[in-house]
Image 1 (cartoon, rainbow, N blue to C red):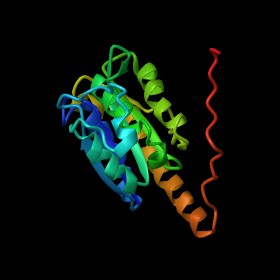
Image 2 (cartoon, rainbow, N blue to C red):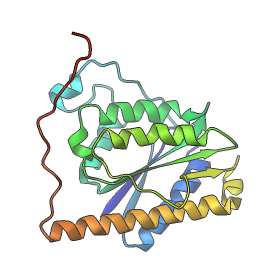
Image 3 (cartoon, rainbow, N blue to C red):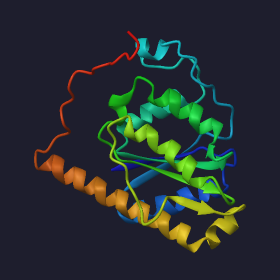
Image 4 (tube, one colour):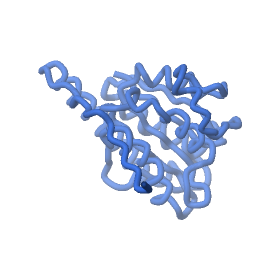
Length: 206
């Protein structure tokens, strides 16, 4: 089993990375392979709605989204991490995930996902809620912890002093490993993901 962890911070080894490492450590102790993918340290294009990815399966912009989607096809679970910018997820991870998920629901369906956020003081719950919406629109089980998945601090050293936040990250990793094991056991017992009905689109303006 493998979990992809996405770091949407412009600081490669900053506060968000520190929190993701705590989650990854718990996953690895449970025998789950992890990989942290950095997306926030370089410019990321927003989706322009051209539809090219719907035709050929790839975005025409080469800034890491296509590579992530290929990794996602083989992954069993996901953790998306972001710093809090103006009470929201970073612009980089938002643009990245908009394009990674658009028209690719089948890549993520049935795979557990979790979001974590890092903030100095406020805005964490709003950013956390924003990231969770990618899961809830894509048939993904959401993994929870003992508290909202957030850490506080202005430096990695300060984040490590957030004892409750660090424990929340470890609990999240343990819970994700448990759910992944449950899914594997279900598959071995012949329990498969529910078959989807044909999609229905409702237009409220007629």
